[in-house]
Length: 315
Length: 130
Image 1 (cartoon, each protein chain N blue to C red):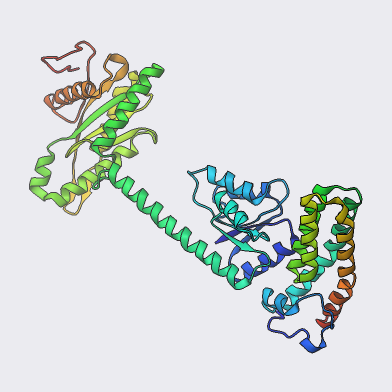
Image 2 (cartoon, each protein chain N blue to C red):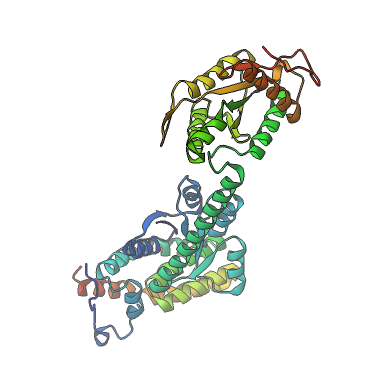
């Protein structure tokens, strides 16, 4: 682990550096507060810092305050080095954002013990962040395919429609459904069915741009949101997705299985529909048309019927 | 290298030793080479810092007196020159309190205190074969 030592006293720096290197730490030394702040703000900068209280350009308290302003960065454990002993000073240091303080001249045993405390706190923080990220992922992703789950993909669609309308752009929505998937489950079992769903999900992700959204809408239904996509290219993009699924059989434990997908497509520029429910209704009708036309094909929702169409808009 | 060595038996040390060597050895974890390096840094940086302090006192520059005496205090304490560090601390406080008249006396006391410091440090270096 790297530790930042910030002290304008070169004797202090030298002694600290030697002591910490002996303990196996990596060490970065600077002689003023401004440089300390720069080091701490670097990507992958040190997460443990020993800051002298009084330094040129910016004192240790100033560095603490600046670091604590940024809540998005990984936590930095800061130990203030000070010759000040009054309770008021200690409180001021802690209030500024320091986690601990050490009085100069320090005892090497106390120094290394306090650094180990800092390390333990950082390790705990890392575990908490990891757990939070894991929970966040589980709350937003489908556990089988790791695609966005239904709630999140609909939320993303809603946001994207709003943005598109504001910017007068176009969002393309695709609803894809695996053809005859029930027979895969019935013939080969759900384990093989799950293999197919995972591989299809992987291919869907691979066939869109990194900033497009792919979610599992239902059992074997997938919702794809193409941001800022030219409406004229909607069918071409959908064909790319369809062929990504159909062109190669899915390898499963029961051998290769041919799989196809039917897709309904909706291009927001063609319609004056901005509610998710309306968009889903139209794209679902287009998917229905693709199924009715023999499956393994794509159909575009038509802007000819704007409400409660008795018949699905079929191309 | 050079750890766990005895530098100077307590009885052999100067009777009026300014450096609390026992404390300093604990702080450097008996690393003789490190101790020599610290003394080297001190010998290089202390004189110009003291000169800056003298200049600031002569010109009544209280802000600089406070800053320089604070830095001197840190250096002296870092080398376990305890009494002189306390004097530097008093000088720092005097400047902070704005007591101009007492500055020169406080500085004189500090100068007298550290007058024999360098020979003592040189003695340690010779003892350690540097």
